[in-house]
Length: 81
Image (cartoon, rainbow, N blue to C red; front, side):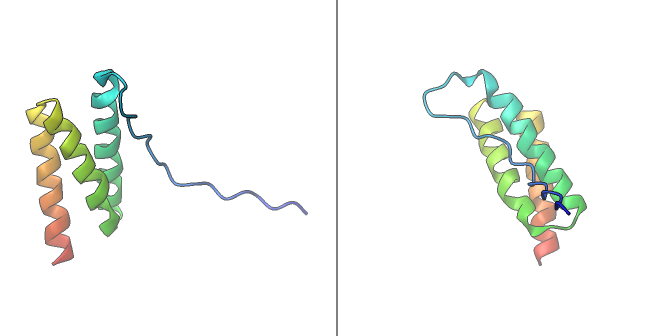
């Protein structure tokens, strides 16, 4: 009997150095979504993708999404305490 292959967790691709910045908003939103899902699962690993998303949103001066990301980061800090 053949075994079913295990599914790998979603890992959004990181932007490569030297590439245009046109994919940065999409990358940042993917990381934000990953962080939201991990928060919903009460997974402390949510902090890493949220920090990456905040960094990207800050680099493109996208303040509304940055504010949301920072609020979620505060939640992860509160959950860890």
